[in-house]
Image (cartoon, rainbow, N blue to C red; front, side, top):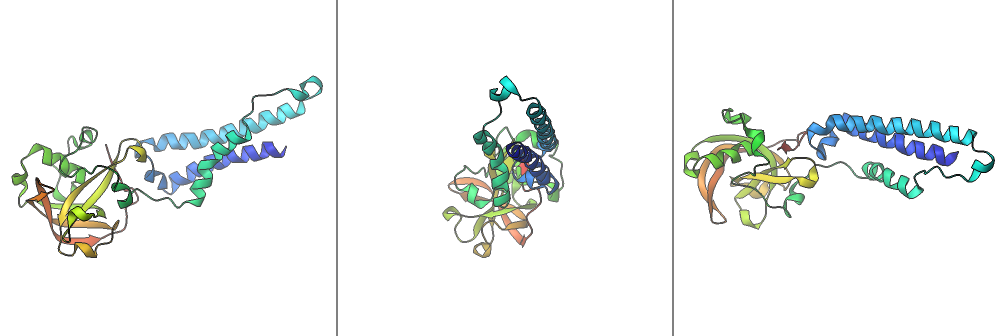
Length: 244
């Protein structure tokens, strides 16, 4: 009886855990927003399976007599149930966090163009106002025009601060991650920002950058550099990713 109740509770806890992550939006730290409906369906499915498992177990218990006493019903082993419970255990022990600067270091950063995966997102967005353009929109624009054509063009973008030895004392990357499916395929993108007080900005700090572009060199590559007029720290958004 106790194993049955324990296994039922594991399934219910998994369903409730998934649903709670949807309610507080932290599920968006891990998957593309288009999969929210599927996540809710999975949460409901776990609870339905839990109820079905409990009812079947009670039915088998009531009719498990005589020769049926040693009959195996193909139940999942305790190891299997532990594997099911692992996401809940880690989810409760580890505070949900979106990808940030620590995850950029071991991935290639796109600073002058975007892959075909991200391009569909920006179709039909070429006539956006300055404050409406995301980092991805600007990178798509970089592919369509020569770098010098951006001289003097104003921009307002948001992202987190990333810096390594390539940026020196007066530059940093205002960065975001693009998700196609989930964080496993996340790709960092960013704009190189020129700002005299760059070193005062903590790594991973979310900022809003206002300024204009001027062509400059970064690692020998001629690209539009965002010359910042203002860099304002802001809270991390509830949905930190861009989508491809």
